[in-house]
Amino acid sequence: MSEGKNVDALFLLYVPHNRVASPRPHRDDATTHIRFRAARGDAHNRRLRYAAPRPGLGSGTPRCGRMERPPRLLSSPLWLHGRRCDVCVSGAALTWTAATGRTRIPGRAAGSHCVPVCEIVGVQEAAGRSQKSEPGRWPRVLQKPDKSQQPAFTVSYVGRGRQHRWRCSEVTFHCADWSTCHQWVQTIQEQLSLLTNRPKRLLVYVNPFGGKQRGRQIYEQKVAPVFSRAAISADVIVTERANHARDHLKTEAELKEYDGVVCVGGDGMFSEIVHGLISRTQLDSGVDQDSPEETLVPCSLRIGIIPAGSTDCICYATVGANDPVTSALHIVVGDCQPLDVCSVHHDDALLRYSLSLLGYGFYGDVLTDSEKKRWMGPARYDFSGLKTFLTHHQYEGTVSYLPATGSVGSPRDRMKCRSGCHVCQHNSPLPSVDSLEDETKAVLANGGPRDVWQVVRGKFVAINAASMSCACPRSPKGLSPSAHLSDGTTDLILVRKCSRLDFLRHLLRHTNKDDQFDHPFVEVHRVRRFRFAPRHHDADSELDLRDGGKGLFGQICRDHPACGCAAPRSTWSCDGETLPHTSIQVRVHSKIIQLFARGIEERPAFQDPGVLYAA
Ligand SMILES: CCCCCCCCCCCCC/C=C/[C@@H](O)[C@H](COP(=O)(O)O)NC(=O)CCCCCCCCCCCCCCC
Ligand SMILES: Nc1ncnc2c1ncn2[C@@H]1O[C@H](COP(=O)(O)OP(=O)(O)O)[C@@H](O)[C@H]1O
Ligand SMILES: [Ca+2]
Image (spheres, rainbow, N blue to C red):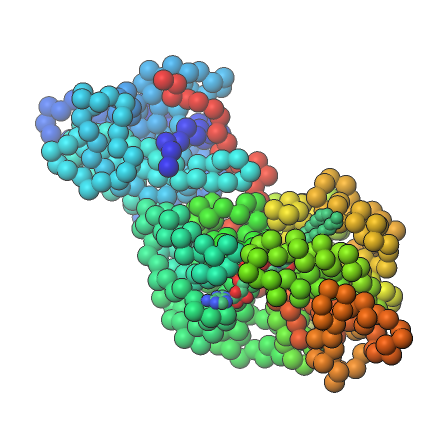
């Protein structure tokens, strides 16, 4: 934990004065400032100004970028690092300005800091050692206040690091007396309690065997301390078997008691949580998930992901980093990011839901092989990836898809999905036919653009549907760099039969800036639905075929015409789980679940401007 040095120039625009401790009562339309005097004759307290918040003030999510003058609730001189500074809290921000700031940043007040209230994690009384005995050094660990020591309080807040990482920063202010200290703590806590989007009680599932098997330690050492600073209580369940979390959510969990569900694990563990929550919501609403035409009811509980898996692509693509503290802080501040979910059906039976990669051919084969090598940890994907690359199979089949006509954006437009993405906001779910204008109905009745299925037949090295970018540490831009988190579409990538060298060229482009779709054997379509049927589809034989081909070159034998066997088939990988059927129908359901995330921030709203409190 480090003491932060964040200031935002924009914020200073609406912090009324840099020297907040004006001795004169400040008149403000929104609040009535009261002179607060705890001890008569105390020069410090004569300067402490307090304004009771009006009912409703600041309720809901305060928008950090709001350009209106926030009412000041409390301001007084306090001490930081042995120096006096003017501190002020309003419904929007906590600001502090060194009374004798030494560093000047153009356009900013000297030594000024600003933390939006919505990014304060928590506040706690903390006894500091006497300033006289050890100036400039205060305890970093929060302690129970000892009345014999100097009164102080510590504010924990979101600090921004590199590559979208957040850290829990701290600043400790020293007060002249305990009464002032209590007043500050109480006022900041009151402001935090008005942020109704923040979770107070969470249900946490930890997969102790995901990734490098460090889920439990990651939660205890990195996440629990952040939750405790934010006064979030958590009921923690360490899973004992696969599908433990899914089944518990589906049938047992008292969901009304919680403000969110958190999973500590990888994409597979997240998938369990999603399946549990979606199933529970549909069961409660009487929706038949087995029917591909049913409209799913969105889940009300938000889901947090603490990355502790092998790929962690959902976390990486929604937050921009796979860092447990960053994810914990996104949960604490109550972020909300809706996500699209693909339902995958075989005839009239739901197989699974997919949120990241639904892959047949290359990625399906990588997954099938890697499952036997779980003991290798995350490296299993690289090993199986190389092995699958060397075997270089092609699979024959028919892909039919319904293009996402009418939606903004296309897979190659280089418009990346970022926090507050306008493509996702624009592409809300399609209106029901009843709500359409007569003219539009007529177009649709004549086989308008919404209903024209396209058909592609051939041999494919890979068929991938990326509902989000699938960015991950192996490929920071992802399988489909311009795919969107909640636009109601998925990017269907067809890699046709090609040479091994060409496929390598295509794969390599996932790791550099070149366009991986710019090959004659690759096509990409933004779609709302698609279907796949393997060649010589025979429903009864599907399950038997899945296990065909043992050993490194087993599948080559399956390809060999002399064997007389059916056309070779791959398996679908659905967010890291294999599907039991190759013939599937896929449909995107927009904004069915919500994450404690905000999408990748393009430019952090409150960037670190550099050193302010120069020693
Ligand atoms: C030559 C290097 C090419 C690197 C190409 C990397 C492309 C990576 C795209 C990854 C997309 C990941 C989508 C996410 C899927 C996850 O939901 C899912 C489950 O995650 P979990 O285990 O955390 O629960 N993960 C996966 O399905 C794993 C996919 C990983 C694929 C790795 C493929 C590596 C390919 C290496 C080829 C090597 C060729 C070398 C030739 C000399
Ligand atoms: N206690 C457990 N024992 C065995 N498997 C589990 C347990 N808890 C969850 N799982 C399963 O482990 C699989 C992988 O989990 P995940 O957290 O995604 O790790 P990884 O990213 O390494 O695949 C998931 O399919 C999940 O269902
Ligand atoms: Ca999408």
